[in-house]
Image (cartoon, rainbow, N blue to C red; front, top):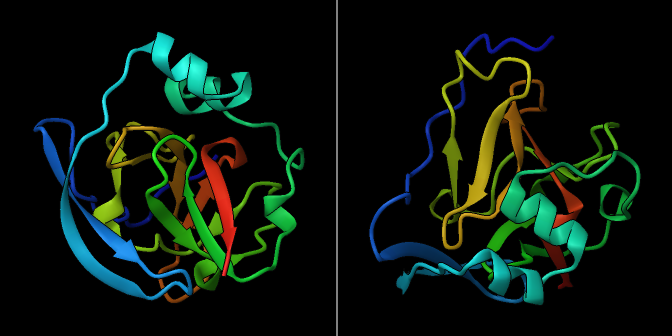
Length: 167
């Protein structure tokens, strides 16, 4: 059982409002500027047409990929990991590390503006704090406090929620 000695900082919430501020990135992973964009909201029927069944169940129904079933957990190529639903840049290879868990793991998001959290650390001790895409509310995975320095956090992310773009 995992316990949060100190909980990760709450990330910006986007559960309400028509617009969100999202940080942009160049192809080589450099942060560009923050832009106000319209939040993406679609019906389950629309998402079902746009995603594979695995992607749909993970991102829209908060399911979890089985560990060691994808390839991103062992990918060491430079690049960006975007949201499979809306292409928002979520993570960079610079912050990726091998956690040995079978899921892609990062010690920080590419930009805190691009992700949000859900759940109270006191109530989510066993499963971690849920991480979602701020632009489309896709379920990405969970945050645990057993990661490496400099943050001590492990963003344990489902491969089905990501799309990798090489630098």
